[in-house]
Image 1: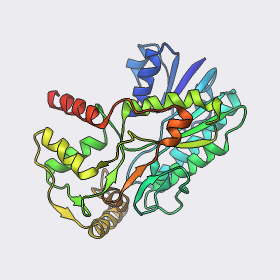
Image 2: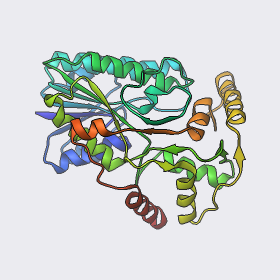
Image 3: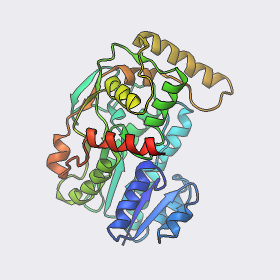
Image 4: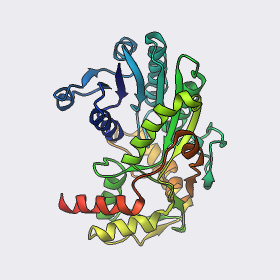
Length: 327
């Protein structure tokens, strides 16, 4: 039986596909864009939207595990678009798994599903899902995660993973945005600069997904797990160390959280009312994430999934610097 990866051409999805191929497994991906390089390696590519119920059902045929990684990710945009991709798309995946008799579904969620606007230091899975958040992404992922876990049954084992700030070589989001902000002079330390956050190297995130697949029949079904490197860092200290290693000046200018949130609210309004392209430079949600503690207890993932971060923050950062410096 094949293994299906939705979003298999994205940062995490492609790394997961690479690992599955290295294990000699038959792989299919559901994605919106062509992937001729994967097809050339024997991957079955189904080019379709997550909400195309017929295509999703076809993709799930003769499948042993579905890794549902695909989602609409972003800090701004129409709430309806996030709901369509993240909620309706996930429902289509659940329905297809049931129709095709898929025994295991591993869902890629996010720690943002427990956003509460306050510091989260050592938070665990007892934290409630958010119902009030200035981010349509977080709200729709929370709704999707809830539906995935409710769908758990003896015939469809479901697990939700919450990897936090995935990074590593090839990262198209986190580090490139930091570098662009620093080089343009727009990046500011938000708040007092002492906030501690968790991150997870992409290879560790892949490990966690494979661990969840194996652990689902052993009692992990119907549960969500935080996935991090298990090494919270001082966010701005890590960012400045990375910039310095890459020959860029460190960030020294500061802005209060209150002011950053005010700028974020204004930017969100402008992007909503005016025909502006791309994403706003700051939002209320991003301002809070840049200033607040958000690190998590991964003891449940260690215990239930057998997850153990292989690549440390120091090792991963050194490797990233080497690759970016030689690019």
